[in-house]
Image 1: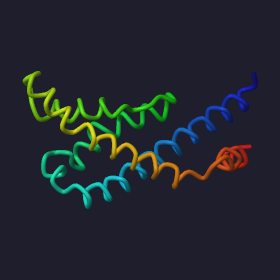
Image 2 (image 1 turned 90 degrees about the horizontal axis):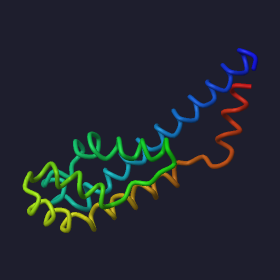
Image 3 (image 1 turned 90 degrees about the vertical axis):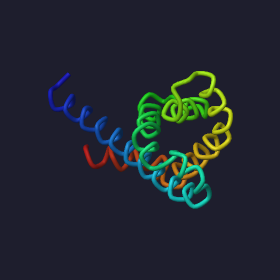
Amino acid sequence: MKPFVQFERATMQWLVHSYQRRSVRRAARAAYAQFADLYPQWVATLFDVHFVDTHLLPMLLKAATTGGKVAPAEVAEAWARQISLLPSLRQQHIARVLPVATHFLCMVAEEVVETEVGPTANLLVERAVG
């Protein structure tokens, strides 16, 4: 393979991943703004912007990169770990926050759908590179 073709492919992959990361970040921030208005009591109990940026966003970015998914139970577990070290209490916290985590992930998914450019995004990236 010619060096320029390799460079072109690497550049295109970087652009696509960069676009995905920006879309996910934008969606998570927009969803959180709505979430904070709807659930101020959860924001007060550390389902806050720090939690989203530090724990949830890395999960979402990894899922976007690998094509995986983030389960509400993973979000609930991460939130509960910051609240309690005792496994018995953590299970209670997980059960309590699971519906909220589910709703937040749905909000993020809706925002991703709204911010996606669609199938033309790849064409724009290819044309910019090639």
